[in-house]
Length: 478
Image 1 (cartoon, rainbow, N blue to C red):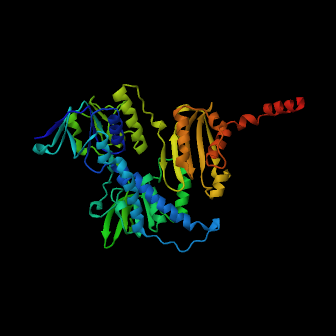
Image 2: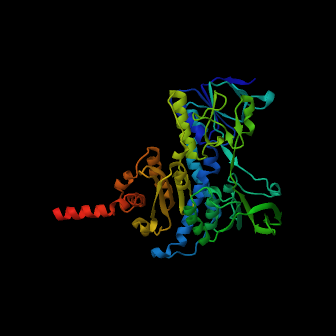
Image 3: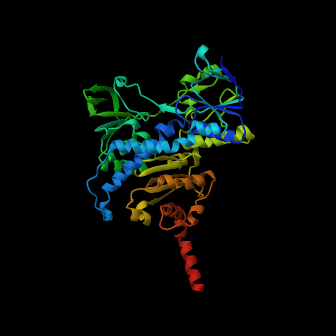
């Protein structure tokens, strides 16, 4: 007989969003049931952000050794033990995993249930199929936070080829000799560079421009680095079919004439799709679409008892966005406080080298919404810290309205992901560019790049003939 549970809150999914909700609610004494069918920590910990950044860190160190000559450091022949790189990746996962573990959340007072959740009706979630139902949960409120998984395109022959996604690429113990990457978005480009720096030949194929959602001017800096590192990028191509030929993978490109790209391994990185198929959302009268569950500004679904946050919705799909949404949802559910999610306040970072970070509006978006705008720039090569580190590639672009209200910022260059946090704060708090122009930035740091860009907002005003006459007058009286 199924065990019947009636908690105040039932959270489905133990990734970043679900864990944040469960931990906060339990800390406030709310009875919580947390359901997870796979690994605690979700995609981010096990197959996404954490392992990919661990791999990127290893690849960056390999590249640093190769480029140590200008610093006066001569290195011996570089040797990469890819199996040990894989060990490093999993040691990092293991070090973080206890924070997301079943044991920790049980200790917090959360009832953790392992299994596939599905809605039986608008008020009940069950675990287990048919007559074998193990749990029936009639919670006061439900939160769906089941995340997303790789979207596999309908390419002829792909189902017959052993391909990689982010779900299994971090299990490789041998380095691919020639990796073909389908998709030039953040995941594809990050892994393409990492594998190249670790010794693979890499070809990236994309139907559109790589990093197509980013500022073209800033994306070009990353693409130039890829070209210099020997990564082949083919944009605007259409993959017709894929086939396995002995120990090689062949990707056939359609066009006026067919072209065959050969490699040893294939990585599919063509986007994400929400994990909603097994939830039986229709039984709960929850509106959804291919991009995810439809929610209002309070994360409420078409079923007033059910909320959804994170990648499973149509909102920005980032781990930090999911955590932010969790905090807002707790405020609304437990304290009845007003909340509002502004997508413009959510930053994003592509962890290539150089990094590419953005928050707010692009110059095109700002011009469409605000009309008259100012675009401020400053290059890395005019920054002393960048010179000492020999990280002179890149620049910052800041977009303001005519009065100096900060609308957006894009940074391409070293530590861009760290620097973007300050601009995120500025946009969320509706700061004027004067705040950055007047800030005291420690010397020498990359933060001075943003300050120098901010100062350029005022430069035209300080070089007018009226200002020059005023200065001459003050000198005369002095």
